[in-house]
Image (tube, rainbow, N blue to C red; front, side, top):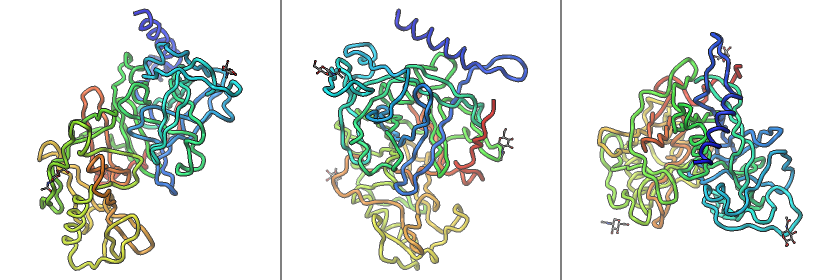
Length: 425
Ligand SMILES: *[C@@H]1O[C@H](CO)[C@@H](O)[C@H](O)[C@H]1NC(C)=O
Ligand SMILES: *[C@@H]1O[C@H](CO)[C@@H](O)[C@H](O)[C@H]1NC(C)=O
Ligand SMILES: *[C@@H]1O[C@H](CO)[C@@H](O)[C@H](O)[C@H]1NC(C)=O
């Protein structure tokens, strides 16, 4: 009870600090926040610049939808007057589910103290893991009135992990210093924002709108995209399934191409007790991965529907490719490319993957079906990747355990590149 009151008081003080004076002279509390994200063209990974530390510094992080925490390398150049490492067995360690006591034999610095708590961080691209020190420091994020960037809001004691720089390896974009996780887990960015702002009318949801220059919204709509379109409704909804690892899954019941069911072993689409099978969403896989038999079925039917267009030699990592001249993406939507429908929990709720999300120009003049063969031994049978999420709107409603979505904003004559990043007071 005492710690709750203290947290309430701290939160209350910080909201006072950020309370914005509107034109009419009344005050309003920010109830939504926005994080600009851009796509790295070498790796196709999504990168967000996040303000951390005191004085604040913008640091680039790879966005991992299923990541359990925010981790950053602290070995060099970590300067902040507000860095703290909670003692082992403290409430912060319990909250982070970090029960190991951490020690460090080199000179004391951020990430290297004795009697702090240790937490495992993961490189989501390679799967490499490493033990680091649980830490807390200031994190700042832009509030937003729905369009534009509003004032920065501080979260004074944001929990994260100081990981060794070896964890970055060479697979992450060159300037990136860590990974920001949005998973359904105790200290992910989405969970910490929801618990910090929970009392202030903040809806515990976050919304991905990914593109070359896209955004992630935290909190409820409206969110406006140029030319003034509220993209937060109307959405279609399907239940979110949370795996034991805190990853986001949805139920795909069948797949249709040009409105025809394609044959799929239905067992593969169900998640079993060990968390195998089913359909996971992921921002760290550039293209959707399909278990081998599903991949075979999808590529065969897609090719059949494109009869008359001869395939050309496929470009890695794809299985079927065509001459770009013969496969007309047209105006990106409404082209001749067959629609691929993921039929969800209810046969009327469909995630439609149209040409702009199903076909990619993989080499000059060569367009490929943007799906990858995952082989026979996959954990999830379908992993919906970043290319299939581009210019989709995906709202993770954590209170109601549901995913709200719009299959393609292009049909609404806008895109995820259309947020107005001009700052407003
Ligand atoms: C941690 O304790 C060990 C053993 O007492 C000591 O050698 C080491 O310098 C300490 N590390 C830090 C970062 O203070
Ligand atoms: C369907 O998939 C399950 C799980 O991989 C497998 O055990 C079963 O034999 C498959 N059924 C058919 C008809 O291939
Ligand atoms: C972006 O927002 C600024 C500030 O409100 C406004 O002046 C500008 O016209 C907007 N840009 C576009 C393209 O709508």
